Length: 127
View 1 (cartoon, rainbow, N blue to C red):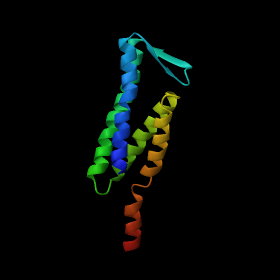
View 2 (spheres, rainbow, N blue to C red):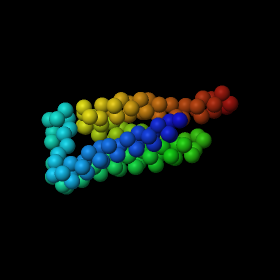
View 3 (cartoon, helix red, strand yellow):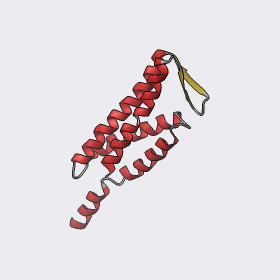
View 4 (cartoon, one colour):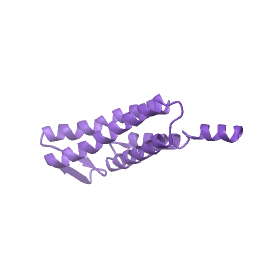
C-alpha cells in the first residue's frame, strides 16, 4: 500500500515539471515561496523542471521497489526517506501551489518510518 502511494506521489510531481516546461514554452515564469521568488529564463526553468522530474521518477522507482518486495530492505527505506525529504523541500519552496504535496510528503514520511517495524517486531517475538 505504501509503495503504491509513493508511486502516485511520484506521478504527481509531473505537475511541477509541466508548470516549468509550459512556462518555458510561453517565455513565462513560475512563482515560488508564496510568489516572492520568480523563476524565468529557459535554463532556470529547465533546472526547476528537472528537479521535479528527478524526484518524480525516483519516487516511482522506489515505490515500485517497495511494491515488489514482501519485506522492504533498509536500502529501499533509506531511498524512500531521502526522496520524500527532497520532495518535501521542493513542495515547501513551491508553496502555496504545492501545499497538498507537502502534506502528503509528511504523511508518507511518517508511514515510511514504520515500514521496517513489522519485521523488527516479528524478530523480537521469535528470537
